[in-house]
Amino acid sequence: MFKSCLICTDFSDGLHRLVNFVPDLAAAGLETITFFNSVPLWEEGEVPRIDEENIQAAEQRFQKALSYVPEGVEVNIEVASGKPLDTIPKIIKNKSVDVILTGSSIQNSLQERFFGNTSVGLSKLTNKPLTVIRPQLITTYTREELSLRCRHLWQYLLVPYNDSESGRYLIEQIKQRVASCPDSSLKKCMLITVVDDSGRQAMFKDVRVTEAADKLESVKKELEDLGIEVNTEVRTGNPLHEIMDAALEFDISAIAIATDYRNTLLQWTAPSFANNLIRSSWFPILFFSPKK
Figure 1: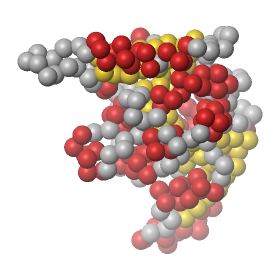
Figure 2: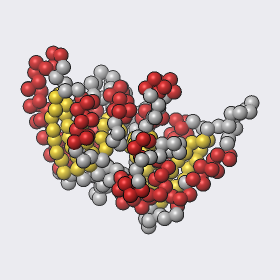
Figure 3: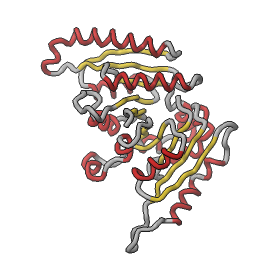
Figure 4: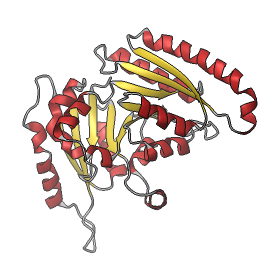
């Protein structure tokens, strides 16, 4: 599904473990892999300066990624000085990047409100897709489990769909990625629509469920034409809760979502929905945002 990736780690999110799994990442279709760390400026003196010692230490921690690189695969190591939301966009500008791997915040929602979240902040600065992985999950994998996870990062996607502008954007992005990678690692999709049955919306629930099912069948055909196995399901209830329940029931690799920061009135695609899903999901999130 992707040919090049930028793996951003602060060495506390578990993503630095991926230096040991370059062949497995290559098996997922990646041809160019860049490991990146942003080292904070040294601010103990009167004038902030580049922390050369920690930059060298970070570069050394990435060296294992170069120990076994399959033929036809390029591995890069990049370490910069500064804040991640300042340094990562510069790397993206200078490198070929199809997708960014990053960790979700381990802070609680109150801390995050004051200090921010790199993944959420990054999604507003670039239209590159993000794959967001929880640190609590990746750090507990055994080497055997992590090897398998790297090979299947985007093999089976759960795709929430509600026929909005951003919903169509999400489907078009998936189609575009698969079309550009004939040997795509994406093999299956589970399309799901959740009909909110709360309040007045419950009055026309049956009609809306039927309409949703018809729309999913149309999208299913589009994806099947690209050789993807597609399942569909319509549920009623709270969208966030039902999506998380569906993720537990099916053998998915990641949840794919899109958001539109230009229109916060869209029920599913408002930033709060995406942020809540990133915070609450134990599954990796494949996150698309529109072109800036």
